[in-house]
Amino acid sequence: MSEEKTRSLNFLEEIIADDLKTGKHKEIHTRFPPEPNGYLHIGHAKAIWINFSLAKKYNGKTNLRFDDTNPEKEETEYVESIKKDIAWLGFKWHDKPYFASDYFDKLYEFATQLIEQGDAYIDESTVEQIAEQKGVPTKPGTNSPYRDRPIAESLDLFKKMKEGAFEDGSMVLRAKVDMTAPNMHLRDPIIYRIKRSRHHRTGDDWCIYPMYDFAHGQSDSIENITHSMCSLEFIHHRPLYNWFIEKLGIFPSRQIEFARMNVAYMITSKRRLLKLVEQGLVTGWDDPRMPTISGMRRRGYPPEAIINFCEKTGIAKRDNLVEIELLESCVRDHLNSTATRAMVVTDPLKVVITNFDKDKEIISGINNPEDESAGRHDVILRKEIYIEKGDFMIDPPKKYFRMAPDKDVRLKNGFILHCDGYTTDDKGEVTEVQCSYYPNSKSGEDVSGIKAKGTLHWVSIQDAVPVTLRNYDKLFTDPAPMSHEGKEFMEFFNHDSLEENKTALAEPYISTAKLGDSFQFMRKGYYTLDPTSTDENIVFNRTVGLKSSWGKKR
RNA sequence: UGACCCAUGGUGUAAUUGGCAACACAACGGUUUUUGGUAUCGUUAUUCUAGGUUCGAGUCCUAGUGGGUCAACCA
Image (cartoon, rainbow, N blue to C red):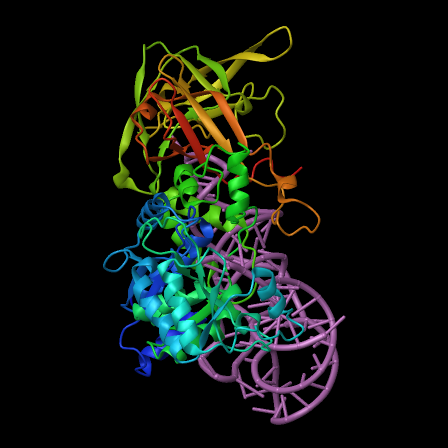
């Protein structure tokens, strides 16, 4: 414990540690602010990890706050799925879930205050006119003709706006900042708009809603958030974020930006993910190939692995594209020490153990070689078994450790076999292999002195249970499907991303599997039960394959 | 033709804040192994370029180059 090397702090930790040290804050308070208009994905997982783990590390708190200021897009259904995903990742939000919509009254007051101070005005310009006034980044904008209308007039109009006196889109409330600012967000941003749309929580109470810039930072202040972490694209909003704090004289939360995490072969655009769902290229938002939290959960990615992945990718401000291998490495690392080992033959080849005279022998299978306490389970061995077709070769290459004529090979947890012969059909395909076993070579009590280089997984033919295996590959054929100008990301969709195996046979122990259990089908990969699995059709999702140094080189 | 952010192995992050460029993943090659898994050892870098400050620069300064972001009544 004391050996623990003091890991260097990332730039967010440095800021926090410094604020604590200087006494700027006694306790830190962060927040995770999703908009309830979609499902959480790997990118959100990173943001969740940043906000929750940072607060935890410095004994602070993290609020879960739904940024629900646009009633057209937001639904309660998403609120529930978001809560579920965060909890699944293992984080607990402070107090209760908060909602920006809880602050609508307060926000209205803030807006009124701004108008009274002469820092905001009602603008009756059209969408096009406002766009025109804002201009382009390279040239300053121009003032709206309504910019200098009397405060009392704006005040009155804003009140009537709230009361529903005007049509949707007929006017907006704008902050009076600086139309010549090189930063577009400072060119008199719209802070309130009229929108008659039923809100998922406030119903029809309001017909005006605040914009992001006038809701997010203010909510941070109301909740006394000390450090408001967001992704880099909000960096241009920061001057405005601070402007409102100053004008309103409210708690000075501090916005700090970090570079969002991009993962190779994954996309996180809500719109594009939706396209995959709508076009039926995936089965839904929780399709195991999806980069959503629910997809990863169904795929069998342990939350611990996802968190560990977030830790390992770190935090910085430069653009990045993390290799998916690191994620898979984290998944394997966790599963290696936790998943129960079992045997499943995916492409069966019959083997007859000719000198096996008993009806059967009960063999003790190790559940997890990394963890003695995981125990063992019984495996039935009989005269007739299946091995993988790929584990037998008539004429093997040099370093082939598996079964071949006149060679010895071990059955996992069982005996060493000697291959005596094989049978082929008229096409030359091997249909059966004949072996004899060494009775004194049983695992754990081997006195045969024989050294078998290879070990095979196997199942007893009579006892095997058929299972469906769904093996997944990357969703896209390109690591950055969105980065190609002139090419649609859909062009890179991997149509071979799902391979269904219906010939697999599992040892009977597998039928005890419960949803959420992870297994390592030895020499094959990590698998978990799919929610659609039934007693009649047992379905497993491949979480991730095993690493293999065999057959890699060509 | 503006403003802002960024630049360290193939990838992602470090570098005791100016003192021998480190860790993880990937790749390749060994060792171990009743999973060709795991474990373990080794190999893989002109720190974008050019100047400058300094005994000493990945770190500080200047210029350049490259990449990214910003113009929704979205968040």
